Length: 287
Image (cartoon, rainbow, N blue to C red; front, top):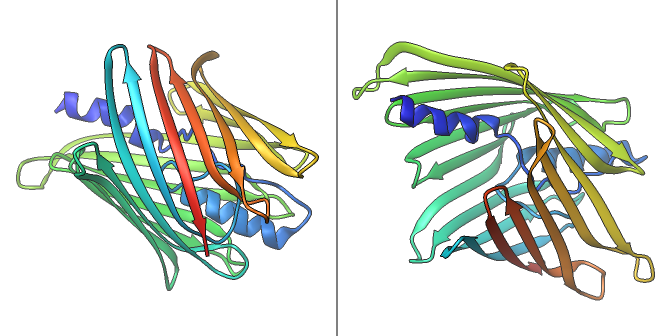
């Protein structure tokens, strides 16, 4: 049982540490800030790194190398938007190199906000995340329930905004309960908490700081490069620091653009400690 729970706590429970954070902005437009904050909060797996609108579909191929070993996967991502750019529906499927579906997310709007249904075939888990909004339409709380054969995991996230509707904090509480082969609780459980703080410079997200209940402190730092002649973002660089040491680093280069300056293709290279490298190629089509 312990072998099962511990790897889980080091990844999904920290849901937590998206090194591929989208380039959320904090602008002078409070209405648009709600749109971008909501789209960011959805945290669709390996979502785009640049806030563009009206994406119809993305095809993504990924190759991971560790020493002489390599494996690849392909993802298909379809999205629908409201007229203001807010995501109303998202369907993401991830396939192995043998064309077997190994992960899926289906986000859709409902009466209280949005609901994301997640199936992880490899992990043998199923999750539901409910996003609830306030009277302005911004997400103020999300609640996740993840079920496996030997545990049930609960997470509640509360979101804090400034007076301009920029996302500034995320407060996380989680609880994991062990279950037996019949799905009954055994009485064993683990719980924890974390606080995320979002920092901006020149309206761009530049830092996310993480403070965990076990006193561990981590952070993600982001920098951006622009083509001023064409008025477009060309590169995002990110670094994830764990206890002050670099644990992961990535660079996303936007390769081709359409006549509206929306990017069409991008290549992301992620390097983790231990020599693991992942190369992701992304291709977009728009409505």
